[in-house]
Amino acid sequence: MTLLKLEHVTKRFAGLVAVNDVSFSVDKGEIVGIIGPNGAGKTTLFHTISGYHVADEGVIEYKRKNIRGLKPEIICEHGIARTFQIVQPFGNLTLLENVIVGAFNRHKKYSEAKAVAMEMLEFVGMKKRADVRMKDLTFPEQKKVELARALATEPELLFLDEIMSGLNPTEVQEMIEIIKEIRDRGITIMFIEHLMAAVMSLSERIIVMHHGEVLAIGKPEEVKENPAVIEAYLGGAV
Amino acid sequence: MKKKWVLIGLLLVFLFTFPLYSTNYLLHIGIITLMFAFASQAWNIISGYSGQFSFGHAAFFGVGAYTSTVLLVEYNVNPWIGMFIGAIIAAAIAFVLGFLTFRYKLKGAYFSLTTLAFAEILRVFVKNTDFFRKTMGIMIPLDINPFWYQFQTRVGYYYTILILTIIITVIVYLISRSRLGFNLIAIRENEDAAQSLGVRTFKNKMIAITLSGGLTAFAGTFYAQYLLFVKPETVFASDISVSILMPAIVGGVGTVAGPIVGSFIVTPLGELTSQMFSNLAGTNLIAYGVIIIIIILFMPEGVVGRYHDWVNRRKKGNKETQEQKESVTS
Image (cartoon, rainbow over the protein chains, first blue to last red):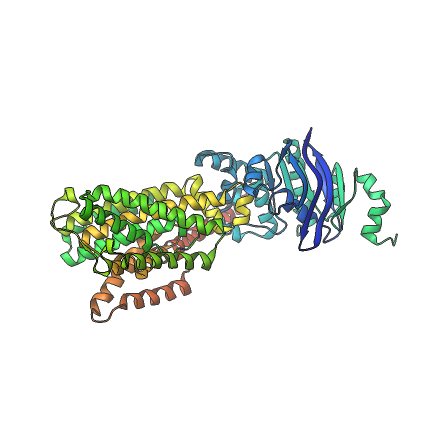
């Protein structure tokens, strides 16, 4: 079943085309990785789908409903959650309070929201520190809590924007396991990542972007051998 | 947790028995202190929780004072009813102000200046309108009867404002533990992140400002009935706005206890300084200025915020020593 479908989506910033005529679709239950050199338009694409930017052209359909032009909060209510490339914590709140904000998306009562938030903190392995303020955490820890917060909104589709950046190899391994578990819970995942090992081991399909355009879509092995991709990444040196 | 309730209990006992052992002048200070605690608590909803700093809450305070007074003097409406009508009108005005500012995404200093200007516009409007008797103000005819919101002694006023303050504090406490409260705090902390979690920022800010404006009006009506006199310079002036926001800032913005603790620190000081230098106008504002500098330098999170921090740190310390012990024994 197709969950998300983009058709000819274009986003321009004062003449600069950041996302150019992008079309693809994501099926329910998939893990899709997005890769591409810096400035390829990956994050802009995420922003455009999740409502932080409005696409200038094209159609964005989620569960066969057009979501182009909707505000981010409405898109979240529809069931798309996201994390940010640069963590966006509620610094003065505790971890628990941070995640409760997310849990209130589907739950009206404080006690219910708190229970969901606790479960999510446990899931990412941060339950022990539930009463610590977000600003007192290290960067990788904040990334985990941000993931818990997004999960607490109970999404069907989850966008992860470079969630592995800044993590050490052990933490990366942990995060890969967490993402696999999220997928096992039936949540569809799209993620932007530079870390090739993680992209190759997680993705069922990979979308390669370059200069705002989709260069290639396919299984990891296919993409790896695609001459256009090698050209974009290595400048044809190999 | 238990200690907190004991503290609240002791404070309530003190507040309820205060008239028994206070002089008439102290009682006056108590009344003004509670009144600004009340107004500051209302301010706390939009400015403390959702972080949209209003410098113009005198607008809602003045609307409350004038609405009940005009209704009483011109149409013989009971002030207890006029109080609610004032709140509804103030809420409607707050709604319009909120719509105009939040619709166009005004934030920070821009929002604050807009609210300041808005209150000033109302002051100038009332000052120049015959219907509101211009700068002369309106006297409330004496009719000492609790039914008409007038009391023989200050004790009656004291208990009225005490109960109002308790009610609003309970309201703010309930908000702070509700979805609305969490949404507002999320907006204050990081609006982009809040949106990504499904927080409808515009709607929540609108609810907060409408509620805040409406509740502030109750303090206005109380003030009018306490002085039995309203005039633009006393209820719409910007130093009323300052007196409303000071307690929350000193006590701790976005905390339930902050506005009350803050008001007990700030308001008596303001009253005393303006009493001591009664021939010099505005000395209370000088005192406020000094306090604000001290607070911003040494405890920007306010007295209650600082207390929370301290408790957190102690808890953390305890936990760490506990963990150390555990690791030693294991």
